Length: 350
Image 1 (tube, rainbow, N blue to C red):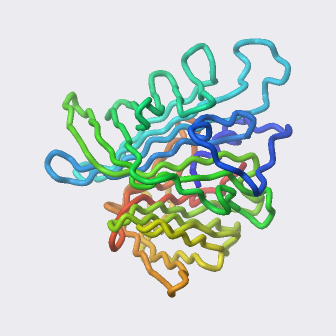
Image 2: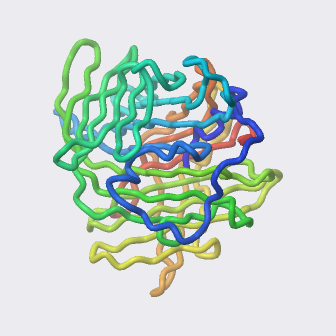
C-alpha cells in the first residue's frame, strides 16, 4: 500500500499497453523476489521504521524506491527511451524538529545512474541505493539537503506473505491486486547526518515489497495503511481503500503472532475509526492522523490505537511531480510502526 503509485499517472507515463495480470497461486521465491519484476507496471521497496538517537529520543524514517514500466518506449531503439523509470523518496520524523524532513529523486533507468536489478535487491538512483548484501542484510544510502541516512537492516524473522500466500486483493475485481510480502522486525544500525554532524543510531524497521499491474479500482479515492512491529515479536498489517464520495471499497491485512501463527484479515475483519484529525496549513488537507484500528481475530476483537509522534508528517512532493500524502511514525499499545494516508487532497489516479 504505497503512496507514490500515482507517480506514473502524475508524470504522464501510464499507457494503455498489456501488463502481466496479478493472479492467485504465486509461489514466492527468494532471493529472486527481492529483485525487480520489470514486466509489471509498478513495484516498490518500502522501508519504514523507528530509530533511537544518541540522546534517547525516537526518530521515524522512511526510505522508498519505486520502479515504473511506462510502456512508453515501444520499439524505440534509443538509449534515452524511458523503458523503466525509478523514483525514490526519503523522510525523517524527528520530534526535536517537529515536522517531517524529506527528499525525492527520479530518473529513467540506464547509463549506470538508475536501475533495478532482477534476481536480488539492487536498486540505485543517482547515488541513492537499496540492495541486499552477501550476508543477507539489506543496506541503503539516501540523502538530501537536510539529512542523509546510511542504514543496514538485518532480518530477524521469515518474510510475511500478505493476502493469499502473497496474492493480495485491493478491490472487488480479482485482478485489482498485488503480489505482496513484508519483512517485519528488521534490526537497524547506521547513521544519520544532519548539519554536518553524524549521529549513530539503532532501531527496528518494516520492509514492504509489492509489484502490480492494476492496483486501484477507478472509484477508489485513496487508502489508509499501517504496519506495526509489536513488542512481543508479533506483526500487524492492515489497510482500507476508501471509495470516492465516501465508504469503504476494500480492506484487509494480516496478523502474525510471535509464535508464527497467522490470521489473514478479510474486509469484514478490519475497521479504522478516526479519533483525531489534523489540518495542514500548507495544503488545506485534513488527515485522520490518530485512529482506532480494530481487527477481528478467532478469539475476538482486538483494538490498536494509532497515535502519531507529532501531527505534521505530511509530505508535499509536488515540486518533484509527486503527490501530497501523510506518512508518519505512530505508537500503539504494545508496539509502534507507521501510518500512511493517501487521497485526502485529491483522489489518486492510476
